[in-house]
Image (cartoon, rainbow, N blue to C red):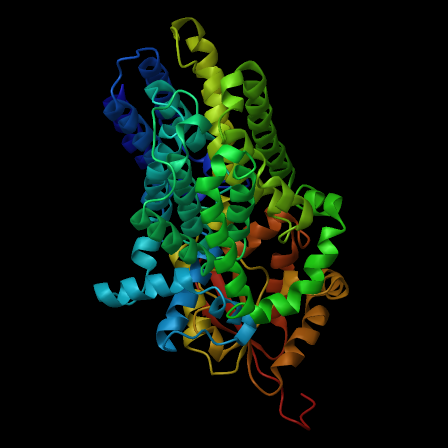
Amino acid sequence: MLPAVLALWLLSLRDAHLDQMDDLGLLQVLPVTFWAALALLALGFCAALTDRRTPHGCYAAYVLALIGLIHATPPLLYSELRYAWAWKHVAVIDAMIRHNGEVPDAAGLGIYNQWPGFFQFNAMLLRAAGLESPLGYALWAQVLVNVAMLGPLLLIYRSVTTNRRLIWGAVWIYYSCSWVGQDYFAPQAFTFLLYATVIGLVLRQLPSSAIPNRGASPRGWPPGRFILLLVIEAAIVTSHQLTPLMLISALLLLSLPRRNRQVVLPALAGAFTLNLAWYASVARPYVSKHLGDFVSAITRPEANVWSGLNRLAEAAPSQVVVAWIDRGLSGGIFLLAAVACVVHSWTRRTPLPLLVVSPLPLALINAYGGEMVFRAYMFALPAAAFLVASLLVPPVGHLRARTPVVYVALLAMLGGLVFGYYSKEAMNRFFSGEVAATRYVTTRTPTGSLIISVTFAAPGLEMHYDRHERAEITEESLATKQLLAKDPLAGLQPLLRRAGDKPAYVLLTRAQNADIQLNGAMPPDFMRRLNSALSKAPGFTSVYRNADAIVYRFRPPPEGNSG
């Protein structure tokens, strides 16, 4: 089936009419041949599971094909890097290179000096390869990250069982349910990959008494492997705020069974000491500034959980449906994992149930900007996927009788994945005209100019950010946004005054309009009314325009000029 799947997939890319994309993103424009390829791929994988003699290479080919279908489709269809955050990280790397490793604190981005590992690593790669920008490989970051993630997943699952069907069933379920979308060009993707590697190394080193159905393994840490572990932990600690805490929480729970402590406690001590030392030195400015917020968040566990689940009031109806599908998928995975622990007693003797619940304490004590509950799901998923696989793919016996049930379950997971992964592409995808307009306002405008955007959905607004001031309408106060919604020109005046005697530029793009339509931060017709008002207002001049974006310049009148 695999050649047929690949042929259908590649043929489907010719018939994807991206100009018809609306509030459900790629779901609306991918042709039926794409969905047929995905359904056939899942059917082929189910067929492989029915035969206990299926080799590892066959399973690996199906999983790589799944990664290709899901993650290579956008970069094959798009000409530009997707996700505004990915563009921001490209800008930070550019700033580090231009300033010899330091990120200027303009616009508050000095925080990246306190967790610079990911950015310094990429800057080193660029210098070694003689490249000017990471844009070339950042476009393919999601494919590369997911392919690389296969190694740690196999390390984790092979530490628990030698059953091929169970191992690869868990791998497939992981990739079918990883809808959170934190695998783009970002420190989170980099450190999550390292986190899974640490967990895999720790599980591999646990004594055989800690994991049933596994042969004898050495106790304690060989010096070389432990040094490798500390290096990986150091890379995590220096690259991201959240991942070290998730790692400490996971290792802390893994150390609860006494039989694990000889292996887990040294790893835990290393992670805790490195993180504490980093907080006390390089990251001290951020920790000191936000310590009060962190302490306050601990007292509001229910608010932390609901902060990420409670933001649908202004969203488009289609996005409300998508949100509930994603929540249903996440809840279903946790429910099936719990059922697996009840039905199969041997799973309770593995470390995996502890790894499933390890992110939950952090979800109770911090909201992480409303994202913590989703990050908790992401960190729990590798272990939860194995437990679900143990329920759907029994390690012994024949699978043929339950193949229809397994196939329907896998299709349902893939359905939830594509809704979460593809439904916001109208704002995540950028046209070349938007990139050109953003490059104009960041490189062709006078130093010190104020650049005003409606939302964050613009490609590369942070490039050369140390030369400009920035304002984002959707991040303004509620009173300012209400005034803008009522009268765009009047509401814009407080923002324009920040420019002083410098020129101000207003950037309007297609993706920003899509962002408003999907998330509802401003009224649906706001961009149209703002564009209409600026085109007629005195002092505003259109200085750059194409089919996807327009830039207006505002120059304050000279003092004493009433015109």
